[in-house]
Image 1 (cartoon, rainbow, N blue to C red):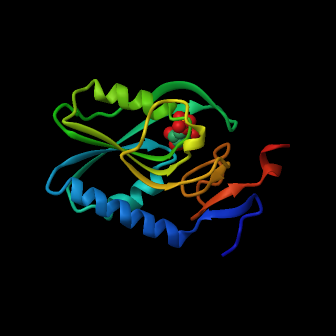
Image 2: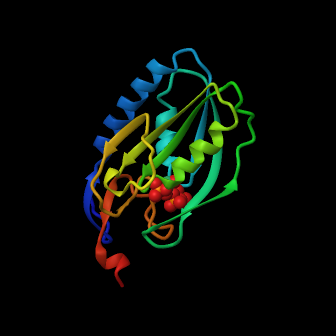
Length: 181
Ligand code: PRP
């Protein structure tokens, strides 16, 4: 495996990602057996995770996308949430599963869950690939978590730094030399 020049170490390898995604899919397949679920893919970071996960689901899904943002171009959350793209489906009476790549401060998901919850879904749950609990500011916990990671700046598997590195097939820790210049 080649480590990108900007990545100082691999935190979650491709093999570990496969194991994590299978384990999450097993739990979801048990929970939602025979139910239709609206998957809400939160752009852009969760694109790769969602694509991997949904192919392992055995219950019917409706895929919706939302674009929200709580970050600027740097590494620190501003706590502000703007809805740039909303879903088209009426989720009233439906099972909703929000798919995220990472929960960091939790500000994005706290506000998003509250907003979607006000549309009267039958149920609403969060599935996140990564959780960084040390950074939490908002009172939010995922219902399904792939893996907990330390407070390091991670990229790859959909996660970016300044829109770069999303294509890396693993989750890596970004070298300080990339953002401290
Ligand atoms: C990232 C990530 C989550 C959010 C988590 O999205 O995908 O949505 O930040 O941070 P928080 O828990 O501190 O709110 P980002 O706004 O960077 O957009 P992107 O997915 O398009 O990269």
